[in-house]
Image (cartoon, rainbow, N blue to C red; front, side, top):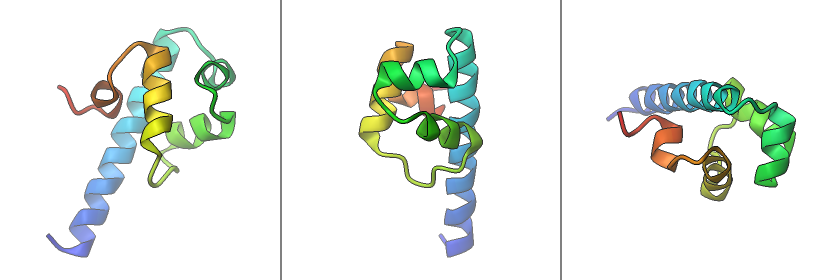
Length: 81
């Protein structure tokens, strides 16, 4: 797979993660600040993830957010559809 193809896949993954995180956070009736506090991550991290601006989020961050939202990291990333 070429460099451009990998870049496009990573971009699509970020968009899916961004969309899922925002949707699930709203479904849980949490603000970005509330989710960040409960997951013990900076609010800016939640914001960047929802904007698709976090290029390579740490697994520990995704795990913490998924735990607060009571879902798997696969569900958060949109991999289990």
